[in-house]
Length: 72
Image (tube, rainbow, N blue to C red):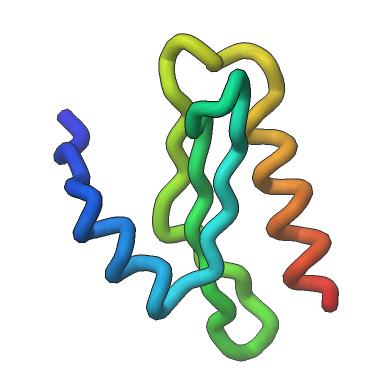
């Protein structure tokens, strides 16, 4: 079972990681938190998609955004 994160957990995560949020219908549909680790490794700390929005490619889009940012 995956532990439930609180809003404060996400706030702390944003201080040490790059956080991407996917929005659908004005609500958060997915979240990806990652950071760089030498040498050139992208470490994904958290990747979540709301069950109601799964199977729409949201995780793939979040990962694509992460790859784009990591290349920069």
